Amino acid sequence: MPGLLGKKIGMTSVFSADGKNVPCTVIEAGPCVVTQIKTVEKDGYAAIQLGFQDKKEKHTTKPLMGHFKKAGVTPKRHLAEFKDFSEELNLGDTITVELFNDSTYVDIVGTSKGKGFQGVVKRHGFGGVGQSTHGQHNRARKPGSIGACSYPAKVFKGMRMAGQMGGDRVTTHNLQVLKVIPEHNLLLIKGSVPGYKGSILIIEK
Image (spheres, rainbow, N blue to C red):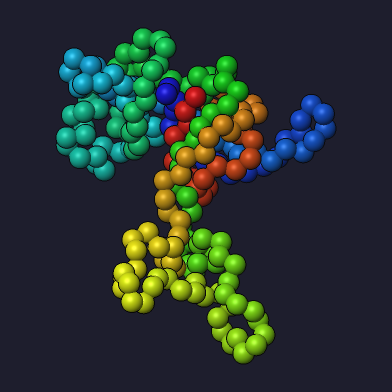
């Protein structure tokens, strides 16, 4: 789907037409520059590669510098591919947040906040084991049994247990676009989106 790269600025709230206070996320969407055009004949599929946020030349590898010079653009920090753009685009073209002027809903891809090593109650929503009385001492938040003893005498793969939580690629579908502010490259999205302040997001129509 066509879309843009953006940066999560933070959260605020706006008043709707009927006077309700609506929480929303502010996203700096674009401007993004076309750095590569992929075709079915050459690459096997059709897509547009977009670059977001400038980067110093001294921090850019030589292969990437050649890639950006071929496109005639300055080095970019983040790259992503998008498909099915309706208009014809050329190398070096700039796409702004006005792409979403006619969009009511968008999908947003981000990296969720990392929460470190967590137990099963927080990580998977377990209810805890047993009662708090009748001799229970410190098992209220334990996972309980994780498998049979005699057969198959192993723990199955995918068993929900304690472990690393967060830091995953998360896609949130059908988020409502409240407002597009083209003069500041801002997009107001109803509700929350995955990631921390300053994280990079992919916004798709």
